[in-house]
Image (cartoon, rainbow, N blue to C red; front, side, top):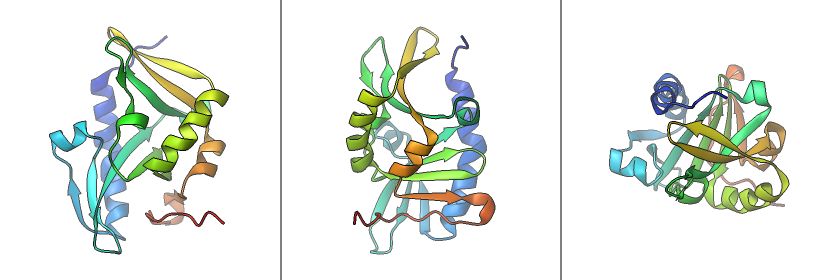
Length: 169
C-alpha cells in the first residue's frame, strides 16, 4: 500500500488551486486567500456572494477518483490523535471538491455533514496511510457524491462555479 505524503498533497493543491481561483473569479469578486490560521479552521478562500456577504470556501482535490470511482470524504484526519477530519471540522459554508481535471462538486457543508452520516453507514471507510498515522475516509461513489452536490461544474464545457443552494423541491 502506498504511503500518503503531506508534501505531495500540498503539491496537488498548488497545481489545482489556481484553476479553481480562475474559475471563481469569473463570477465572484474579491477572492481572498485564507491565512494559515483560517486554514486550520477549514477555510481556503473567501468570496463576496450576491448578497454582499463574505463567504468561506474550502477546496479539496482528488486526482485518484478515476482509478477508484470514489470521492474520499475524510472523517478522521489522524487516527493516532483522534483529530476529526474535514467533514466534521470545516467551518466554511461551501466545499469545492475538485475531481481533477474538469469536474467541481459544490457542497454546502451543513448539508454534506448530514448526508455524510448516511454515507458512513452505506459505504466503506478506508484508510489513507501516512507516516505514523492513518487518515480515514468514506469512499463514496462519484455518481452518488454528484447527486448530493448543490451544483456540478464541468470546466471543459465552460461552466462557471455557482455558489447557491439547490431548491429542495
